[in-house]
Image 1: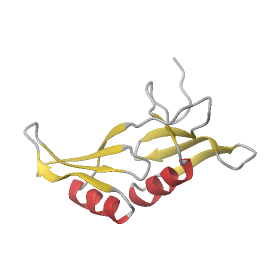
Image 2 (image 1 turned 45 degrees about the vertical axis):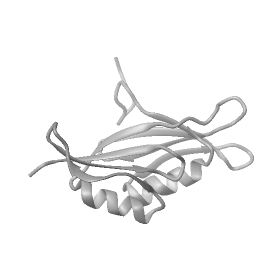
Image 3 (image 1 turned 135 degrees about the horizontal axis):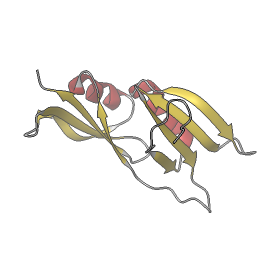
Image 4 (image 1 turned 60 degrees about the vertical axis):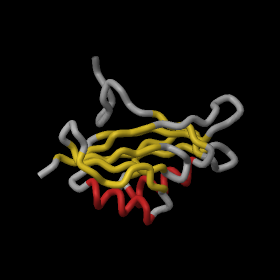
Length: 125
């Protein structure tokens, strides 16, 4: 199987009410890089791709044909506590404060401005 550069067999896809807001959150709070953007005539996002670390997510603006949905992502970061604090400063809401989990990760959770949940995890030192 041949895949486009940077993509894996499974790629998360978000359909949200405000795609520009999700792009802003991802670039400012998660350090994402916008690598592709196609807009409708009304300037809303038809399709976008963001790189976060070594992964890519895709997203689009919801329409009558494509209803918004809520997703959850598990993201390994260098410092779950720091990622949590940065996300809160960029309009995220706390879902779970940073804590050591029984399975061995340090984790925290936030809800982004579009209602998606991001779980930040780092290996306990």
